[in-house]
Length: 329
Image (cartoon, rainbow, N blue to C red; front, side, top):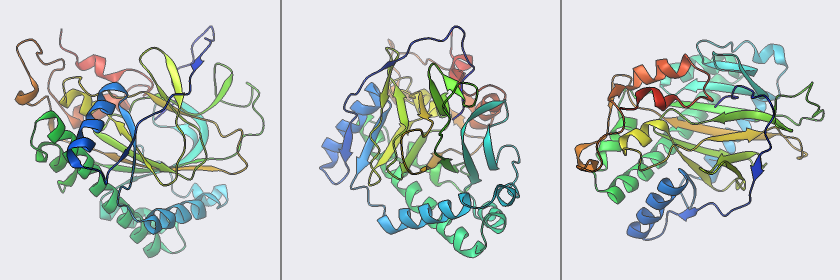
């Protein structure tokens, strides 16, 4: 979610085009489950199509987002950052990270949505209802996917899904806007190697992330061998990203994938991504269920609450590998 600390000297990066799994959710459940588990084990990332989220809900949310980002900077700054919610421009998070983007980060409870809508939109009720409806259906999709994952690895679906449906669920919704960057010199952009960065290398700390964009490319995922893979941008698909908590809850079987977004330098239009981060209630104890532990596969991580892990996350540059702090000897 943020730009990693710059390294010196600059390293030469490897970029490779490979086919990232795209899974049709309308297929036979047993086959869908198998494909999802394989994708989580190998990549920590996959795309889903025929996901059941109506196009008009996505389009309306996209329209509202562009309406906000087209406003003058002074108006957008009315939605000031408050540890860490609200509007941000190039400054990401609380630890000094930066990138070539602007964003709006929202809590997903109705009171917070209603409050922020009054600052974001000239039609607060429309913006609030649009965000609420989008979050509702995408949370439902996240629960559906988590349920299929759970069945695929032999645990009750409710073990995962109730973490997002709980009234105190700590999920977030983020709108990332990447304007066209015309000056790509190292003095004017946030660089990694020779390429300007929109949103730097990181893993997501929550359970599961669902992302959709307007078709402008930029997202990349990192393979275990240090190779960056560009993700084809399909506005009809959702990208599904395994988060740190899900890696812990599967005892390392599913991989929390590191990813980034490059600055928007080659498109004629701005890039917009809409991102739902599925998080549990703050006091939820995160640990691997006994069903997934074996004598030859003891737990890799000590138990911790989501509140503890979130506090640890905010105290560090999010480009760091935060789970290392919770590994058992």
